Structures are given as structure tokens and as C-alpha cells.
Length: 199
Image (tube, rainbow, N blue to C red):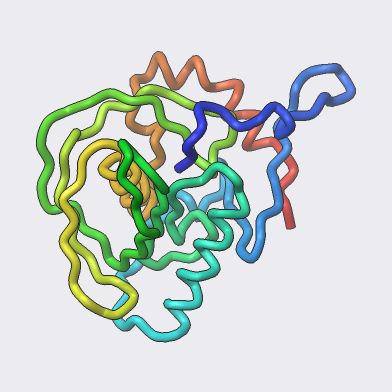
């Protein structure tokens, strides 16, 4: 998930007809996958054992998140890895500082309330939409030390957790908006699908 309403316009370029086209960025150490990539529609597999390989993956995902310059959450599927792993770093919210969160096999246990807020996604650059989600949630999962954790969240943290868990199930935020709103985004989504993919 991205934290800004829109990425800087430097992510767009003009094609020979003078129309804006999307430029999909290379990222390191892992390459982001973008809208249209089939892996984004696949369901990730449970992590049965947390080894140094999984811990290193989490580190690389954090580094990739920070390399985007505007990301606050990333799911393993977004870097082409079908493991149930998400990372979240919302920084500071409402004068409260949050530590980066690494969560294996996250599961939404309960939800309450409802709120509509604009969302964006690193895998769908330059596209935002208002999305209705539960306002307060409880999530359970496993941390990098293989300890069970329970997170009660609201506000931005709740939204990012839901957004990233959706990714693990092959669901994108644009799936949660109405058909008319999606139709209005059709041209933007088509540009992303047709853009040249980073190697």
C-alpha cells in the first residue's frame, strides 16, 4: 500500500502521440509486480516453518518497501513470492511512532465498524479510489521469532493490514469498489497492463 494520494508525475512519460504512458519502476532488492501480472491474483501458501530464508525474505521486502519512497505495506505476492507474509511500516500516525511489523500467516479474526478512505497500491501506480473497509480489526499471526502475536488495530494500521492480507488472497483494492468507479479507472488500468515490465 502507498501512503501518498498519488505518486509523483515523474512516474509517467509521454509516448509518440503525446499521451501519458505509465512507467513501471525497477525496485531492489526485489522486483515489484504490477497490475496485470498473474501472480497478483494467486492465493499465497501458509508458511509452515520460519527459517533464516523467510527472515531474509522479510528483510529484503522491507528494503524494497523503503526503496519505493512512498510505501507503507507490502505483501510477498507483490514481489512474486507466494508465501503468506506481509510487512507494514506506517511510521508515525496520530503522534504515535510504530515499529516495522513483519507478520507470517496473518489472519483477520474480527472486524467492527465501517469507514471509507482513499487507498492506493504500489502494484497499481497512480491509481487511487475510496474503499469501504471495517474500521477496527483484530489480526493474529506469527512474528520473525516464531511467536504468536495478536494485533488490535484501527485507523491507518487497520487499513494497511487489511489491504496486505487481501493481497495474500489475490484480492486488489480495486476489487472492493463499485463497478461504475472501476469503469472510470479502466483507461488507467489498461495503461499499466500495457506498460513495459521491468526485468
